Amino acid sequence: RAAALDGRPAEAADLYATVVGRLPLAQYVIEYAEVLVAAGRDPAEQWALLRAQRTLMEAAGVKDDLTWAEFEADHGSPARAVEHAEAEYARNPNVVAADALAWALHRDGRDQEALPYARRATATGWRNALFHHHRAEIERSLGRTEESRRSAARARDADPTFSADLPALARFS
Image: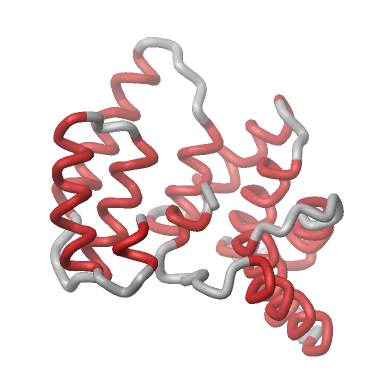
C-alpha cells in the first residue's frame, strides 16, 4: 500500500504479487488489480481470481455483499453493485454500508437516491477520505458545486495522499 500511495505502482505491483500469492484475500486481490492498472499492466487475471472466489464463497453460503458492492461499483456492473449494497445495508445499516450504497447508486446514475446515504456515511465525523470523495462526486453530479467543494476539501484534509484511482486502498485507511 505504501508504495502504491507513494506513486510507485510498478514496485507496489511486485509487492502485491507476493502478498496475493501467499494470502489471496478479496481485499488484497482488488488492491493488486488496481495497482496493476496504475502500473499500466493488465489486471484480468486478478479479476478472474476474484470472480472465482465469489463463486466459491456463494456456493459455500458466505454473504459478502459489501465486498461485491464495492467491487461492482468501481470495476463492474453498477446495477449489481446496487443489489449487493442494498442487501448489505438492509442487514447492517452502518456508515460503511451507507457509503457503499451511495456510491453504487451514484455509479448507476441515481444521484438523488445516493445523496442521503452519502450524508449518512459522512455524518459521524469519521475522517474517511473515500467517503468524502464519494459524497463530493455525488454532489457534483447533482450540481451542488459549493457542497461538492466542501466535501472534496474534507477528503483532502482526511488524507492528502488519497487517490480516486486506487479506491480499494482508501477503503482501509
